[in-house]
Image (cartoon, rainbow, N blue to C red; front, side, top):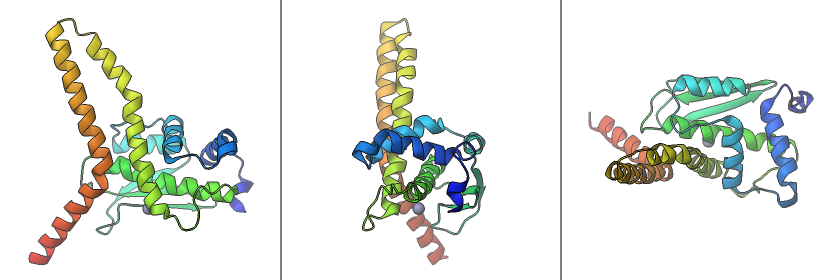
Length: 204
Ligand SMILES: [Zn+2]
């Protein structure tokens, strides 16, 4: 198999999958949450990432990422050919953070491919990879927020005036809630917006 002829030293994704397998071999497969936590750590993902930041992180893992116009309804695609790995994301971002969500989704599909080639598929044939990739993307975005929260908490804790600090905590709580809500419902928001657009096209 071509993929396995390239060692993990030249293929960071393969190295990551092998490390995850060795850590969780006893209780395989890991949950999507565990996989998401491992992935976010390894990838160095953040909640807010510009397309340039995403491209750089991907490049560091041997994956080329590009943003191009894609047909309506298609958010992203990924492909692995020999030692080349590529992710393409739709330039059109229907809702905020959709690019990050799509990036994580495409990664999950690539991870499954490598896990399967290593004889450690995480899904049985009846489970949809598409649905799992959505679950993984949501879990990964939530994991980035959880990792970043302590730094924000510390910033607020350093505010001297009591009332300003309380206001800071309240603001942070609202922001965190809104962010987690947006993580969980992003796929639905996208569906609603693309449906609204489709109807607009039908009408004109
Ligand atoms: Zn997909």
